[in-house]
Image (cartoon, rainbow, N blue to C red; front, side, top):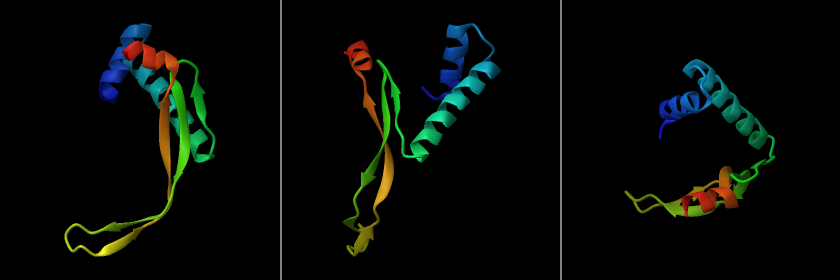
Length: 90
């Protein structure tokens, strides 16, 4: 499912216009992104938790030349599914 399909599904489910559904979905994504940028986490009970993890620096190899390269440490978003979501898809 892509974003347009999600907008259609939300609009149909909530009996609202597609433009309103898109505005709501964009607001949710923006709110989650802002919280993760601050280093926080977003817990949606029964669905899951969005968190920021620190990925350590590592060494890798350029597959074309075989040369060793350094991969910098960085922060990455993670999602942990909640019990409700796990049970719904099992």
